[in-house]
View 1 (tube, helix red, strand yellow):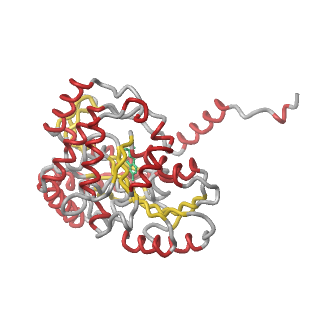
View 2 (tube, helix red, strand yellow):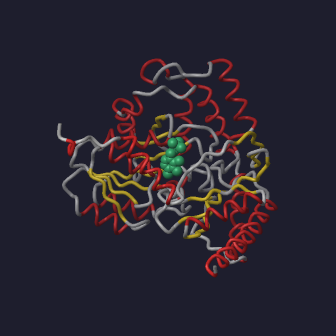
View 3 (cartoon, rainbow, N blue to C red):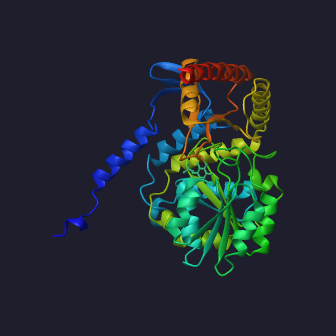
Length: 406
Ligand SMILES: *Cc1c(COP(=O)(O)O)cnc(C)c1O
């Protein structure tokens, strides 16, 4: 036996990787919420005001949504019992697909168990040749980047929001079928992709344009129809679009809306669609109720607009470093990881839960507090948060100055 050829040991490898994460201060831990009441969360026996959920419209605890879930579970049971192509496809799934397609102005919709799986499905089903190319914004969601790996296509990235960069990448790879992919609202920055210019790039370069609007649906535009509709675009310019149901809609799952032929192809060939159990009918019923509320009521979006303006105004007055976001995602850049962790811990002591986002979720040196707002917050809560952040910043800066002196 040749010892030089010994196989790497997986246990040894993960041990070394964990040691490195420890040294970098990058251990991630889960916190268990024991109770939830609106934006208030009970954590380790203390009630905190949460500013980190994606429940932008506050629909996850809305009476009509919960009642729809309970009612459907009572009739249909807890699970769907099979995949969609076997016997798990229920008429309520069908109704939800029709409602989403109608709302977003697309011919057809297909329901997935999660946005992550929907993104895997789209590229796996449509970019099937090794010469195919997927051109993506550098800050796209992890599931979109992983999807290119699963599909086995070539992945090319362009600088954040840079349509000319997208154009160059597509021009350089004119030999393969191409898809141009971007987030609508970017999940960690809260800014919005330049969809009109990207759609022109896609048309000129004959690439299929796919927009993942996980954080825009329900929130952006007068009727909450998301970034694509708000940019005056539709199925002609953006033949496929992702809407998730677990964020502003407060439920769970995701829907891909698109041209009939594309959706048909996904339903017949996408492995993350075919080989998984359908969402429970009760979950689809909850989503359907949430979509109807998001379409009908404007007050939640109006309230969000007011809260966002108040937060930004307060942050500016206190000299906090805001990012270019008009959405409910309002990150505050902190730079180094120790600072963001100290800020988050200090805020928690003052009764606020705000998540610290660190690499590799965001680029190196771009650690941030990711503040998210919900229509359930009050103006007073938002003002109290801004005051608490300003105070926490002063405390953390003071501690840092002591450490540098010492
Ligand atoms: C959250 C998110 C997803 C994944 O959706 P899930 O339903 O949570 O799996 C996909 N894309 C973007 C941009 C997201 O923010």
